[in-house]
Image 1: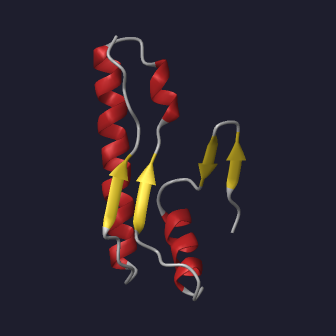
Image 2: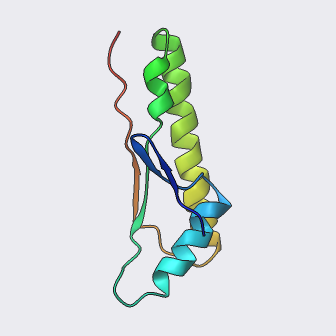
Image 3: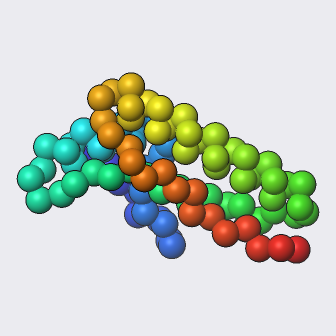
Length: 89
């Protein structure tokens, strides 16, 4: 499993990469997989409130879809959080 370390970011892309990582985590006795958090840092580039809304909706949809993939794979996803703060313009 590859985890991206970008300036100011860490994580894996949404969807199946999250499921693959979660499966590895549950195999480790020293870690407990509780769920996921998103951070759409690119949303800070929104030009107006309408673009902010699009980013927020996309982030929520990605979290919901990935959580469902986790559950469909037999993994618990008790914590689902969208972590992006979209400042007011």
